[in-house]
Amino acid sequence: MHATPAVPRRQVLDTAVEVAIRLTIIGVVVVWSYRILDPFIMPIVWGVIIAVAIAPLFAKLTGLTGGRRGLTAVLFTLIALALVIVPTVQITDSAIRSTIELDRRWEEGTLTVPAPSASVREWPLIGDRVYDAWDTAHANLRTALQTYQPQVQAARAFAVAKAKGLVGGLLQTIIALIIAGAMLTYATGGEARVRALASRLGGARGEGLVSMSVATIRSVAQGVLGVALLQAAASALGMFLVHIPGWGIWTVLVLVLAVVQLPPLLILGPIAVWYFTIADSTVVAIIFLVWSLLVSISDSFLKPLFLGRGVDVPMPVILLGAIGGVILYGIVGLFVGAVVLAIGYELFRAWMQGQVEAEAEAATG
Image (tube, rainbow, N blue to C red; front, side):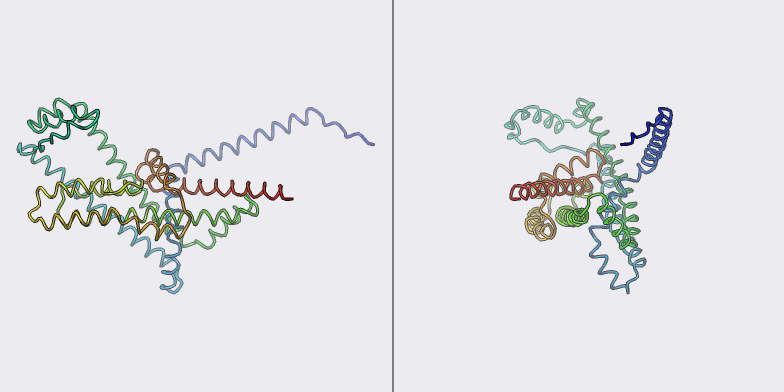
């Protein structure tokens, strides 16, 4: 046997130093690249979700334009931007008009708060305090606002912060739609690269995981986000037609509740009850109440219709993803968080299923 020649310590040290320098340079480049792309990560993720969700519809539209993907992508982007910007302008206009009206009534001294019901005192834990604060506001709103000035200031700061978040979310959505249009233009080549990367990272199961992720995105986008948008749009239409003050703000709240799997009736119900007290026509008030009930229960038949086309993601996963996304990223996180956590859940479930199957094969073998 021939002994392996010993490597000089100097050579080992030089090699280690060279490897450390290379890893440091690579690390610096990676961190620097991440910091540069960080402002665009959320719009890119949101754009990918939109592109994957509407890819089947985009394919059909491409057929109608004679296979011209570029033209189809431009048309999609323009239409999508119009569908986002026009309602946003309407909602914003409604919120501004409501604020101006409240300010005018405040200056004229005609802004009042209805008297509280005696049943408010029966609310557990907080009934007496809520009743006293409500009754004070009913008797003299200016005195009440001065009494609770710290709370009013905190509520005002919260509202301003959320308004800024909505503006930022709108800008991110506009950027995401443009990104989605660009991705759809080169969807074929992009899909091939993603599947190749998945195969490199995940081996034989890589492509299967990609297909499952695509199915999850489309399922959640259609069955949760799509239904929520339809409910919000129907709510906005009903409130707009009966001239509900601040209907734009209520529409945003309905959208949030629908995404986190809570019934829109939590918003529409009190509005419908209040509308009975000021409506000129009882028939119109009844129609609005029925409309609110239909909007609230519409998810019972819309969700199975859309969600059943993909994978069955548990509602708690959607709820946690939506809430966590809002906390981290604002209004856009409401949508992105739900989809990303659903994908993570499905990947974890697929991994667990693969482990169980491997153990079963080892036991039988």
